[in-house]
Length: 149
Image (tube, rainbow, N blue to C red; front, side, top):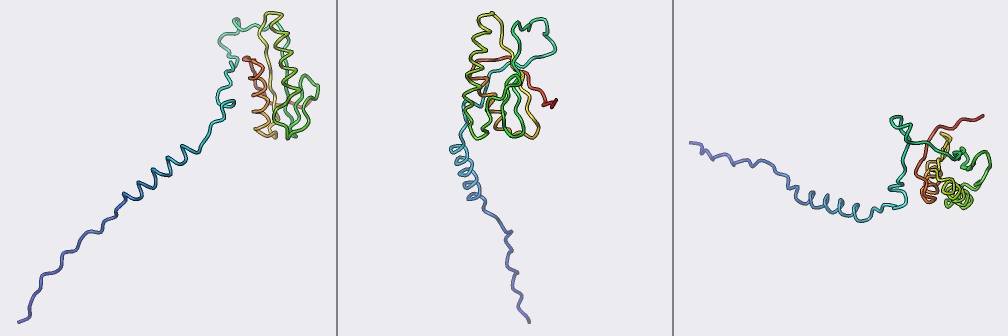
């Protein structure tokens, strides 16, 4: 008579994922610790114009128009200021904006700047212009598209 042996019990396969969870948390902590936020680009504190309160925002001084070309040139009121696209500090623009803010304070009005950037211009150059505006303390900024005459 043949002997019958009981069939061995088959265990369900298991996957221990505790080490994967540890690695994912270590990666998360690594990226949180190594990432930095540039404080001068986080919050520029500018008020953009709205259509709701047109009567409340009346500007008495002429607005300044800053254009950023595709090559990175910065033009202020049809006068080329910054032509070296590798410089990020924009000293000539900073000086002119400071003079404009001083003139607006004398006339007791709010300074207004219109920024027009070419679609082909680099985003960093646009951010550099906004940083110069924020550094001068100008809070009324309008951003428009670039129109070539």
